[in-house]
Image 1 (tube, helix red, strand yellow):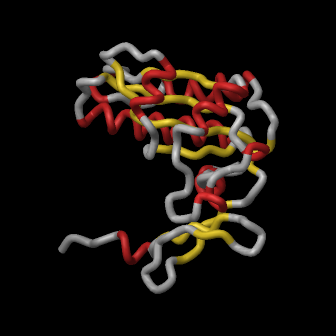
Image 2 (spheres, rainbow, N blue to C red):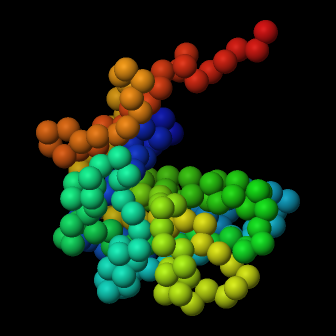
Length: 191
């Protein structure tokens, strides 16, 4: 798959087959995070793997899915949950560069997953206090985000923005349509 095909396909997915992410794909996801660029090469991010079904279920109760959709449509049902979560951690007293590093690592991780056909959903709307307790985190680290992984059972496609509305939505097949602004709307020439 060429890079643009990979980027167009690497959308957010929220409903998954109950098929475990294989160890080699998990390794590739973590390796992609490990080798990602890092400001001053600090490499301050850490990761927690959650893949036991009972632990995945606990995390599912502490994250929010699909903010633009009603919960009954946007939240995966029990038989559609991800089979893997990865928590992205940053130093509790971190800097702006830690957020940038997290963004780069998240991009690398989700692209590595998608290269193996594994979809993902990056989540920042999470219950950090309860997740911190669940993971038993030391005080010097904080949760930046959670990423759900699994084999998608729906499609997610880019469509043009209509009437200025950027909210993603479901079509009649319950596939996600994700409006993206036109190139001329996002690129400014400086004169």
